[in-house]
Image (cartoon, rainbow, N blue to C red; front, side):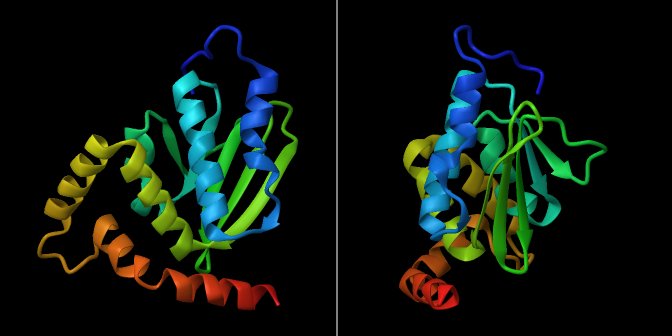
Length: 175
């Protein structure tokens, strides 16, 4: 990322942000969405020099949101992952988040179900950036109108109704 960090913030701030509230392993979707959203807001607000890498499949769903938050997003594959970074990938209906510090050490690896994650992430975006959210969803609606594809907003709304079922199936997977 070409931006410089705000004076007075450095390695401890970056490491703290990359820890995602010490989440590790398989976690509830809402927990990962909230921790990642807050970390990304912190990176954007303080202009921390943290790279954001997103898989192509997931980029179609959240890239515009991340950019509206003020983040520069690179779509994988890229030539080289430059630390520190947050790597976000969609694999088989799950989301995997890997954070790596400035010394190229893994800080955390977290996974959860994609559906619950997207719903919570979009809900947080709408809450914290209402005007930007409105703009994105209007643009996406116009872009997808007549194409038969779901917009991010309709995807979120159609799945929010089933959040309890999603969380129940997630807890069943844990057993």
